[in-house]
Picture (cartoon, rainbow, N blue to C red):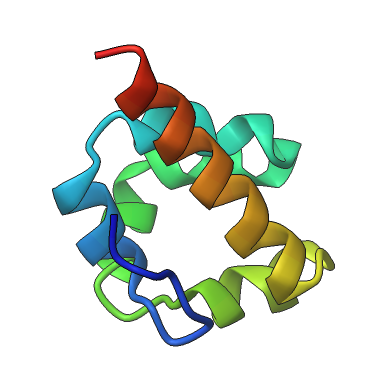
Length: 77
């Protein structure tokens, strides 16, 4: 797994780890919006730092949670 940073784009993560679209809402209820048609347009520009600002969750916590989700999924394969 590549290191996730605050500049990592969400569309890149979702392309590389498609299961995240269903898992990210577990981090915060606001992330359920990522499944909407408008979100698909916004995801192309959004970074981890952007969703941190929108959700009020620190970037470090989001990176930690995303890493945990990816590691958990990969260990179940």
